[in-house]
Length: 78
Image (tube, rainbow, N blue to C red; front, side, top):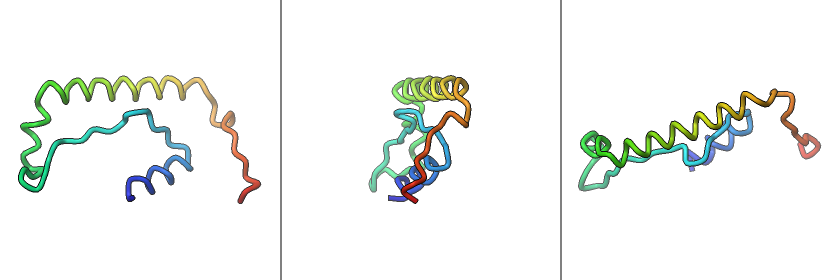
């Protein structure tokens, strides 16, 4: 719920979120997060990080092409 609320608030104020713009490390009750460093150094995570970076760059390049005044908002509902 916290992430959902933060997303909605930040999106409302104009923050752009590229698709698949998050990564998770594997952890569980038996294998806590302090052990994640070993897990995130495997090739799978490097590929995920590369794809995430490409998605972020695509959003940044797309956002450069539009002016803030081009965004439309219907404020009649407020």
